[in-house]
Image 1 (cartoon, rainbow, N blue to C red):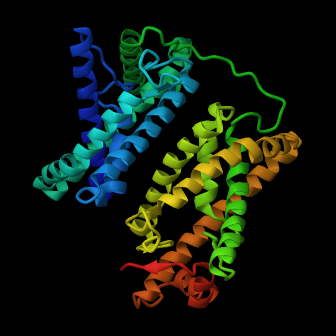
Image 2: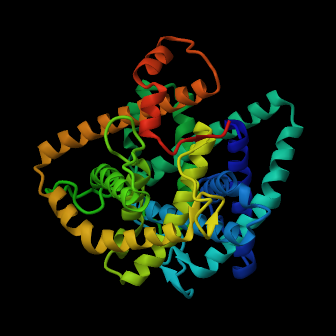
Image 3: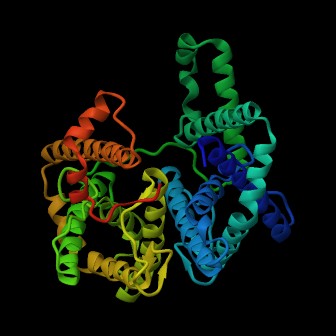
Length: 432
């Protein structure tokens, strides 16, 4: 998989997703209705979900059709849920509504749609992706790259026009004269044309959508609710607590103290940090639901998340950091039933026990000091992840016998030698 093949799959899935939605609506309502958010014939949710499923679940295509169906449904449903709420947050309007269907959640996802996602996942991985890639490889390499870049450029223009319209800029274009003084007349006319066409199409397809910008009420509480700042803090706290919990668990079950860190500086588990941030983002609205509901949601989402993390690390670093092959009811050694249940219990413990006091503690920070500390954490964790990734890539290269080729690789060899990397990542297994 390269940038070009992944981009090609994204556009193919997005187009056929748009076509599927249009045909489905036509059959049900006997009329045409554009179901995409963008101006072009593409549904981004289908493109994103299909690409993630193809890359993350393709090894399940032959032997584990049930889990391919299940994880396709879970992943695509999560993408649809996130997309729906992001659109609602930035546009203050609903773009689809499953409220009339059984077993729906907020009207953005429902059981019947999830089943359809699962079936589409089976079709995509087993037949759709091979056919799409075969078509792409029929084109000469240069022609294929030109086609991909042209599609990317069109998507960028379309997305920009849509974003400006949704931001409420279109109705304020009395400022067009000021823009005209800075930009060429052709550019201005093109921009106005894109904005006008985008607004007209969106108003016609989604008459309930309010395209006027709304003023935000500024909160006086630091990191209130489920804000981005709160998620940054929860990511760091979750990464630290996850590392501590896993270290203690290994000591109890295996009888040894073992590093479970994902990073070279400090006891931080990125898998747990991202999990805490994502589960808070996804399930924040439902934190007051029953423990059994949170357990099921945590088990399914956690299992799919851990599986994708395992695939990602193997694709990027050519190695696996955990292997559950010897534990009963495992799936490719990437996940197992027992640890999936742990994700479920963790979701319950998080929202019922840990989250309320942690959230309250974070919100008590003074706004100025909290903002400064947040940026310190962002810079530190960003640098930590960058250096850790570079050290892992260099560690893999040393295992394959590659000598240092520049000053950066020499520095990495000196400061992150094999002994140190083996101590930090004792479960690292190279699959070159």
